[in-house]
Length: 227
Image 1 (tube, rainbow, N blue to C red):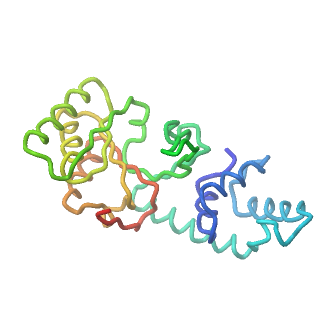
Image 2: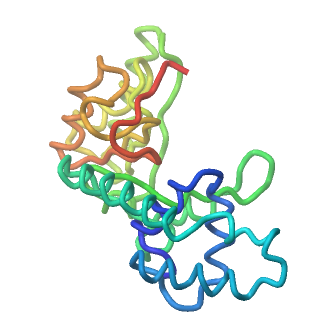
Image 3: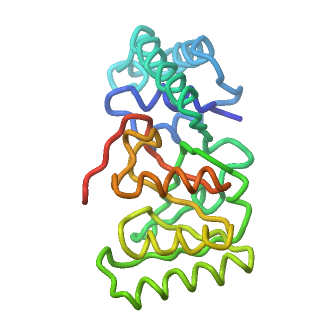
């Protein structure tokens, strides 16, 4: 493993460092980096290798910057552990390949590099099917969403949606109706206070309680709005 979850989270806390930069940093790593001491040593070596110190990316951040970012990362991880939220990174063998090798709408590589999860991560080994749609479906639309979710769940599919009001809710509930597998991929932290929409907080809890899974790219405490 080139970078642990803690080190990736540390790098994410550095101003101006995003996903693409972290992946580029990893390209220069020959020995795994799992502690802040490892990261500081690697950083020092990269600074020494540069002939132009002004343009060298690594010279933009001091060891103090790295240590401060690591303290924030450790605090985030500790809070996640308290909420029973796990973290899995791009460099772990059980990271979902569909997200690791994701191609965006422009045909560019756009992988997810850090995932937070609550519940049964093994569901990602099942074939998944998404049931999504409008937040204001007709009665027949809701019936259809539940029906298809139930039928696919019976065939051992993981029903994936986003916990939104309407069709997403129908998909999750359909799977739960027959004790099937369902995963909610969210745009907020996975602590109960951050769950959105609030109307589906109990549904989120039910998903986890019944062997389902909540996933997010966002750490604990990250709120979400309608859009």
